[in-house]
Image 1 (spheres, one colour):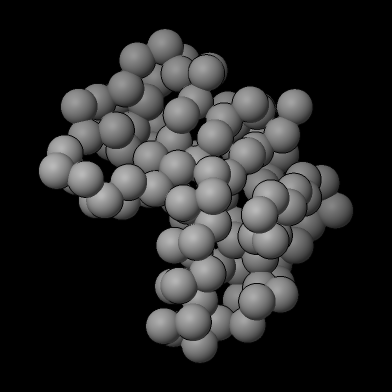
Image 2 (cartoon, rainbow, N blue to C red):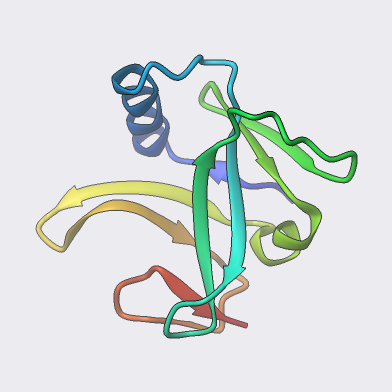
Length: 111
């Protein structure tokens, strides 16, 4: 199992890199942290400080390098990161098959 990135999400990530002058080789760190109205929330950030741990999982999809810590990977296995810019909201969305429920904004979830 891995973490997948849709083509739209990858395109937006590349745009953000260009806008913020972030080198293409800098991985995107995806994590799950405590918080949000459902108990757990997603965190996306570029790992510019290269805080890579031996236990981290690495993935690459549509030219985007992704790093996930082992604890977060247990929650994220099989998840697809997507990006939408429609009328219902603009932003990144996680399609997580492990989430038992999520809040209406889609930013937090529980198992």
